[in-house]
Image (cartoon, rainbow, N blue to C red):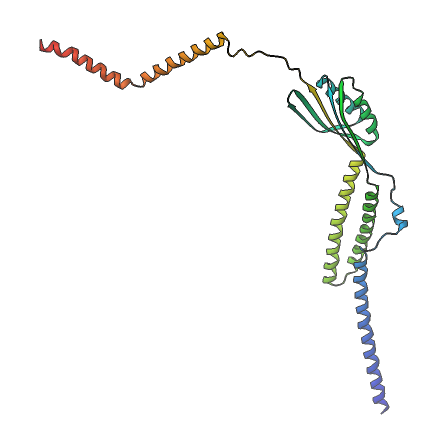
Length: 274
């Protein structure tokens, strides 16, 4: 009887150990994936955001439109200023509207030289009239901080996923972690490109300039109806008519050949009768 009780106790103990092992394995698996899914959702605190560069980021743009006395002179001056200020031409376009010759420029000017560049452009003594001057500023500091904070969080999550990938024991776990790694890498690249674009906009301001020169309208009399041109056109038209008739007659050479044969036959026939 004692042996039977002892045997039942051993069986109960083994069953209890097996259940605890199964529960332990389930908890470990759940903890594994909860850590993985929680990594990208971890938000940064105020202290973390303060670590980023909080320098104010301003995008500045300008538009100028003015009339000049000599277009070439003003364009040469702008080119000299570009070289002096480390700026460059992004695009340019020339066109004429009515009696005005326009030249449109889109320039990229270092933000540090933005004000001095505009000042020197408008000091051109060749300017006759300033029609328009617009300067816009846009603060993108908050966007910088937000993107940098997102990048910090995503990079931390990416590092955590890579650590979990090394600990993965099953194929399904590896596939799940690798999928999250690919998604995070794509998000990080997108945020980095956005940050680079904003940085270029902040560092190099856009300046659009439209300058024009009013062309002189000299009176040119219409000489098309004068006697000389009319006589020349009449002679030319007559000569073209003669040439056209000549070639038309040449095209009838079979008719002329047949007519010649008939005439010769008529002239020869009476002589034979006599």
